Length: 477
Image 1 (cartoon, rainbow, N blue to C red):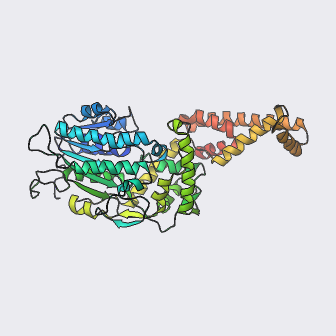
Image 2: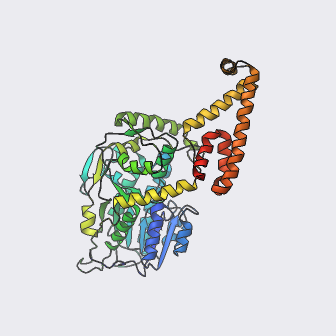
Image 3: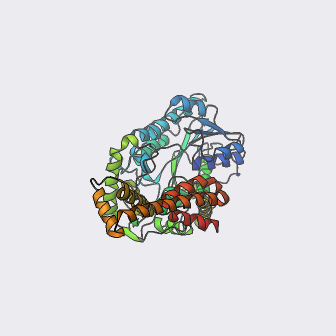
């Protein structure tokens, strides 16, 4: 397409479902920058890290649930174009909450479609996923001619629900609008690769957290495995081009939008092994890159065991104290089996060409993560935590608790090293005094070099002593 930069955007009203999310917020700001008359962010959350920025750009934030028809109708009334990004169950604990996955991804999409028909909205762009055609079997340079993956064979509920929703959206293309006689709803679907960029809050923070704790201990699959990634600005560009591709008043289209009823794969166009992609990011943060490898079958077995454990814990999946699962079967397939797709159709029909190169995108992401690390409470691996907590607890039990159960063995071990109970108690007192003194020093030092985290440095150093303090001393340098 050869259109102006703001074709179909100026003087139009846009609604972005999931607009407080990473991609949704970036899209809202770009629409506002390009001259949209009104941009509405429709999201279940009250606020997000991007709320203030959206307000500064004049974006109207509406709270609501796509699973509730009344909320959808209220947010979409008067809109000219809808970007449907809201979804649930992409990764982690969300993947196991099957009821909510269907409620948001399928029912929510039905509500959006019905609202578009009833309210006379002419353009709907649906953000889909590679998983509508991928289910764990290798795909090399695939394209949009691939059939949908059989619903019963999907490895996760998210992929199945997104496949159903995408088919509903594309089959709704061309439906007549109730309030605009002779006019029709035009739809298309964008299938993005794994998304990254400054502020991404699903994949990279989870991986970085595992690396920080020393739990990113192995790679999955062979080094030759490749997958796609897409930088957030490139995805936003693809979405905006898709909205232009649904305009029916472009010369040469004969009233039939080029993108109507079409799916499009979009990526940076540079397939790469996931762990090769992560390597410069982790190294820039001074975290270890996994050296050992785990085959896909073994990783799947581990993922299934973890999945069973978290299924048992289903009633508590939304609790803050339950950490994200280490890995689940669907995530094994995402990183351990080659699957990448050609963005050729998006380039030829929409004019999509990535404007940010992978090198530039990774550099921006690294800069963001380094700045985030500087502002956060840094600490040792989980192994150091276990060593300190278990060690101090054992020493306390041996010195102070009655000699019952395992305490007798802890006392016998302590006496083997320290020879007398007097020395055991003296060592405990010295250890506690050292931890208290180091914690107070850490608090005073943090007040000067990292005041936002001063309380955190106090409690972490109280628990870990010098193992925590050394990180603060390094920051003070």
